[in-house]
Image 1 (tube, rainbow, N blue to C red):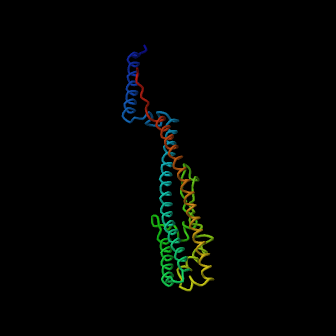
Image 2 (cartoon, rainbow, N blue to C red):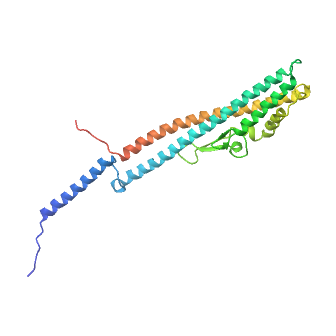
Amino acid sequence: MGFRINTNIDALNAYNALAKVNKETATSQLRMASGQRINSVADDTSGFNIGKSLQGKITVMQAAQNNVSGAKNLLSTAEGALLSTNDLLIKIEGKMSDATNPTADRSALADDIKALSTEIKSVLETTKFNNTSLLTGTGGAKSGFEFQVGNTYTDKITLDFASSILSGSSTAFNGSLGNFMNAAESSITTSATVATLQANLSTLKAEVTKALGKIGNFTQRLDIKEQTLNTSITNAQASYSSSLTLTWRLNS
């Protein structure tokens, strides 16, 4: 004689329904507590992957945004030093003009020119950003300072504003400045040497002007990069929020 165990199908169905309700309730409570629609990969695999990808891009763009700010601060530091240098060159130009006056103390004027040119050299040597020389040396100041300013590693900008002072024209620039640092009374009164100093002055002013022009152009580009990043970050954050967070609906 065979045996049969009766099964309470209704009870099992009720249990399964209760377990399902409990699971859905726990999921809903977790979503309400975290404010996120997706709390694990199992909730929505594709949505989770998209959200994490967006989160990574946002992090990179925010870092690039900080790089842009740092680059602009670096340019501002160099700009201030070059503007001071330009002012000192204008003063030297004035002293050279004063030296054409036969009644002037040309020895004192020569000393003034030497002092002003020495100060120019000091300004160039002491202009630093985070202990990095900006207007002297053979490192970044010569080859340029590289910053990532976009959402990819290849989206970079190289700030080579000082190359006109330190690269191909370095001999002309430093040589011209050296002539003023060694100026004597005879240097500013003898026609031949005066002509040389005038040419040196033109060289110095032209190179400083060129460097300032590059700084202006780089600053404009960085302003555009900053605006683009702000827009991209805002859009990416909106997409990230919609893919991971809950959307609340109120029944009217």
